[in-house]
Amino acid sequence: MNTTDLAPLIDHTLLKPESTRADVDALAREAEELGTYSICVSPSMLPVETSVHVATVCGFPSGQHASGIKAAEARDSVAKGADEVDMVINVGLARAGDFAAVEADIAAVREAAPAPVVLKVIIESAALDDAQIVAVCEAAERAGADFVKTSTGFHPAGGASEHAVALMRRTVGDRLGVKASGGIRTREAADAMVAAGASRLGLSSSRAILEGGTGTGY
Image (cartoon, helix red, strand yellow):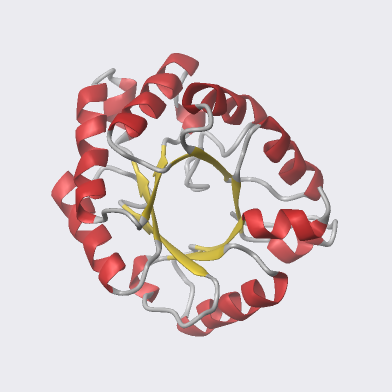
C-alpha cells in the first residue's frame, strides 16, 4: 500500500497512563497532519477538539470490569464526543468457554453506545486459542459489534499476529471490520496486517511507520 492509502486506516493511538492533555493535543494535531482516520485516547482525556474521528477505550486494559461499569464508561465517553468505543472483553470468560457471558458483556456496551457509534471488541487474541478466537468473534457479531480487534497492546501474551487477523477475517467475513493493534512497529508489519485482512490499524508510531521507519510503543 502507498502512504496515502494506509493513513486513512490508522487509529493514531495514545493510551499510556502517564499521558498528559498536552500529549493528547499533540496527538490530534499529528493525526490531522498525517491524515489518519482517528485518534484513540483514554476516556479521561475526552472531549478532544480535532477534525479527525475520536475513538476511546472501555474496560481497558484488563476487561475484568463489571458489564454495568463498562456500559457506564461507554455512555459517558459518547456523551463527551467519542465516535468509536474499543471495549475489552472479559478474557477469563472466553478462556473458560462462557461465550454467552462474553456476548452479554458486549451487548451491554452496545446498548449504552448505540449506532452510529462504532463499537470495536478487543478480544486479546494472543491469550486465546483459535477456537476461542472464533467463538468470541461470533459472540461479538451476535451482540451487534462493528469490529473485532486483536489486542490492547498491554497483555503479556503479545499483540497482533497475521494468523489471528486472518482467522478473525475468515470468521466475520465482510460483515464486520477487523482491527489489528498491539506491537505493529514497522511499515512491513502494517502492510502484512492489511494483507491478512485488517481494515483498521491501531498504531502509536504512525509517523515513523508511514515514513518507513521503526516505531516504539503500542
